[in-house]
Image (cartoon, rainbow, N blue to C red; front, side, top):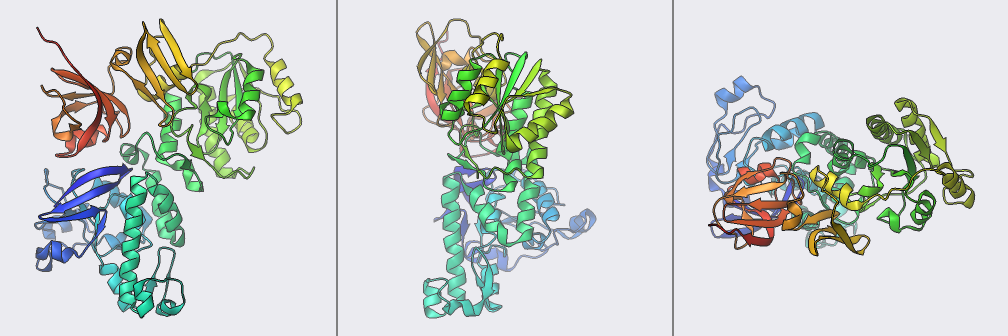
Length: 545
């Protein structure tokens, strides 16, 4: 069996599973004994997940296909075909063990190997299992639930009497067949999972499904804290909007990556004065009525920083980046203690890193509380300019204007901010001319386009000339051929380890250059034996003497 991955959403993958003449949509639920008849007779694979390494090395014997893997057993690479983790269901009740073993297992097998989780999938946990990287499931858990008289739904597990309650109108419920209902519930859920992966919204489905089981909620929270592991699989762009509807959103890898890059890659053009501003419902912020008022008062006389949840802080130059320009959050006016603590820590680190001469807070409510805590921890004095509890009132805007009286004006440029955030370098500005209407800007040099802003994706898009202005990074190196289509993983010789799915990259080879968007992280490009590594946009043949 092999997998053709067509969509990625973090660890989750969607596409097709191919086994001989049979093709299944992936992730899939199937009669796995029909796919792999050898499973009926294989032994010495059913070793407990928590078994010690000496025990596993003595008793565990990997079989054929799917090849059994174990967290405590060194995986022999390369592997071909599907892999299977026996007893995976035994770790689900323990979130700590679940995520600890997941990181070890997923990190040890090839990224393009289909992953089978036997006897574990139910309508309630299926979205989380797919979100953690599994591609293939069976009906064993649902059939067992039928024997035990349990009526399965994505939201709950009920008694068999629910068959006649009108909760569900499937064929199984219509005929009083619990076995059929449970299987159909699993089939519906896997179809929904595939659709959410294709749309980049599986996280939303996982957050809604896991609420009925404390262990599943724990797994979501603990996996989010495995940032180094999860971030490399997480695309740099995503659905619009990114719905940050739960407390867990503070620790989503997209959110943490944004905060990390703001602190480590970005640096403001000026450090004399910073103005802290509230966010707005409309994105990018500059197009909202409130921010038009703020900007008319600031008039380029200070560095503008938006304080928001869950992202923490958004410099004005980065307001187009994903997810800063593409998120939605419930607005209640209330910030809980964890929210305040996390965002105040990020703001404190920003203030400590850049040491502004003056810090002006044009904020109210929870955002003002965040600013006060951060300023105190950073040893800064805070000037507050909101006069009547409303940042957009005439009195407050006049106070903000007066506080900046005498400051020099300096325009903040989205090209600079996006380049720092996206590529970690600042292109030279001399000779550049801007064309278009914000946010869909294009930058030219000598009449030639060098950069465009893809506001929908929140990315800077360099042309071949634009790549010459960027440091030697985000390159994918290929062998001596001219790409006729997309660049496949087997053709990649090397890649910048910073590359993530969705990144703009330059493909470099002896015979040609190509621009495009990465569909894999650098690690996956180098470890995969199939699949599209870079979706090509343009190709330029190189001249050789």
